[in-house]
Image 1 (cartoon, rainbow, N blue to C red):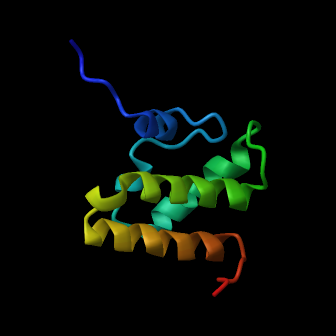
Image 2 (cartoon, one colour):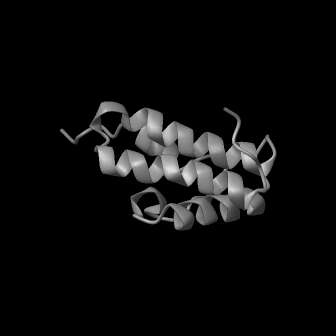
Length: 95
């Protein structure tokens, strides 16, 4: 019997909206993560929302699916990537 892959991993790898670069969420550089998501969102012809929303949604999806299993350092990098994504798209953070 083979191990069943989690549906969230399947979505991350085979998103119907964005073609993500391999291992994009494993980088330790928040700017690289944001730049990669921006490129993927801007080049996608299948996304339903504007590029910023699609990129941010994918990042939030990944963070939320990892949940408690996400080490604090990784969570910090990914949260910083949100800020970098806002900068990359010329958006201000909404507090």
